[in-house]
Length: 240
Image 1: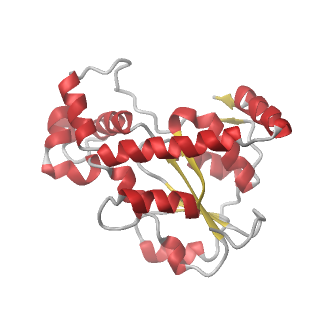
Image 2: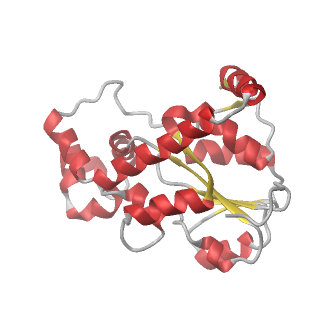
């Protein structure tokens, strides 16, 4: 994973899977580093490689694999989300942004159309496998061998505890960012539509549970002093 246990020496590579609280993490990162110490990826992979060789942290919508182009200690971090919840959130967010004409299609059409398939079918596995296809076993292997923390959005404070310890951050509060404005409080879709989402994301469902188990194991392995620190953090860190 990394050649050093010192946060000062490591490059932190955040793989931001869309609609997994990555924008909230980006805001937290901005509070932890100077402007010339971190880089937000903007779809120029060559620039990302250049920045990764200089910065303390890089974050963005890029897949696993950038470490292959750098010659320094590194570790990966990411956040995963319940696959059904992620796609519902993605649908409403894209509708708000009028992205890809999603505002003119139903959720079922969004899920079932080949036009959007690359974004709605096992997208989390694709990001973390780091290839052209969503390889579940490769994604699991990467999480074990290259990711210091694979957080879970539904356990955000718990995930943040391990991320801030890994990175040497000081966090007292954070603000939720990029939260959808039009998504209803209750899911307005039929059981059949939700089953369609699950059928197109079987790999993501298994990967999500795998990552959640890894996080729960981290919590269980804390010693008594660390458990006190953990409970204090997750109960006192403030969401603004």
